[in-house]
Length: 136
Image (cartoon, rainbow, N blue to C red; front, side):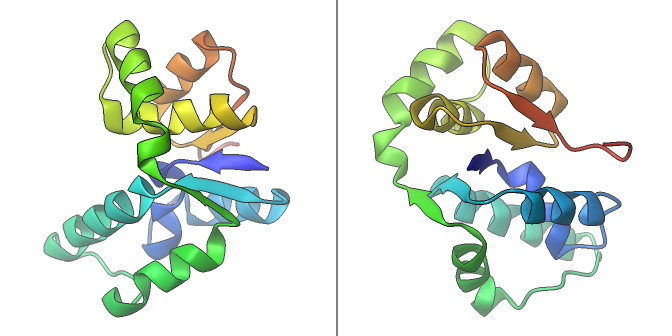
């Protein structure tokens, strides 16, 4: 089991250089957990990619089904927001990102992310972190 943040999932829907690395991480993980916030963050990223003219490999009306198909566990954001806010205040980092940290702490599971700053914060919280990079 691992918590995947949106930055570690979005590349599989685009022609992003990290696409193959993310797919490797997904295949190597027995179960994927995400907060409900992930659906909004991925949709927003796809909107930005399309607006910028980049190709996207998922139909907009199928996005929620695709994410549901990837995630084994989807946790309601309301179960995480209090802990996320505490982390956000302590680390001076956006609550939306800290939702993923709160979930990883709550589930006592690794965080998989492509966000270097979030990975650093996760490590300070003693969350096992797998940073997806071109070389990882």
